[in-house]
Figure 1 (cartoon, rainbow, N blue to C red):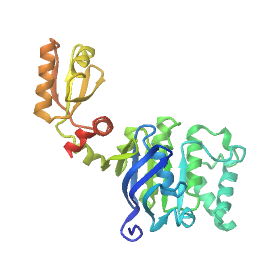
Figure 2 (figure 1 turned 60 degrees about the horizontal axis):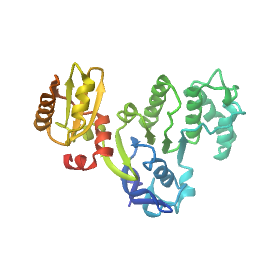
Figure 3 (figure 1 turned 180 degrees about the vertical axis):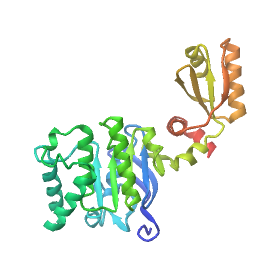
Figure 4 (figure 1 turned 90 degrees about the vertical axis):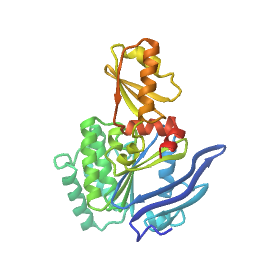
Length: 318
């Protein structure tokens, strides 16, 4: 494996981690290009955090090989730590220190010379809009402000690669949007970002995403590519009695999921377009339920559901 000079930031092969009888990560192969925002999507307990900790060198794999920024992990993890940043969902800075004191402390931890430290803190205070809050205690900041401070702390040393483990789970939608703008600014400047998230709208913004389920990698590609693999397998039903239509359709053997959105139903199935539409019409007709059936463009939520609930169907589509 050679991740340093070929445009690849992370390359993992056969990555597994066992905790006793539990196989938390199971044979994951992962390739993350440089200067990309790469999303990690998966249900709770799918292995996202465990995988990230192995890639950082914080956990030793039970099996497999990892190369990050051209370094072998965990063998060269100490060298790697100076070149990566790591941000978790829990605010982990010192709440009884000010904004500026937190950043100065982290600069000292990374051994930055005093003058360079002062310049870097000034730069981050301006970039993340803390000009009038430098002396405010971190513990008194809002959720969105704490998030921005945590990001500033994670990039204080100018890492080439940034790991973010569900960083937006506790903030409002506006703060989430602002945060993602900051992430894309980092990617545009050449930083590689690996971000785990529960939010479909965030995952759709990533250059590429990987979906984990029960420790296994079940989908990997750009959001558009993955949605394209489901082409013809989603239909929309407009029904005067959507709950009744839902009851009828959810029992069909080829249907993976039925989601109600207002008075319409979004149906995801294992079969192709003509078969899905015809099967849905027949089922509604037999049950005496009125409804207009038409094709629908698949989205990332459909990809997620197909990969985590109907893995065999997803593999057929690919």
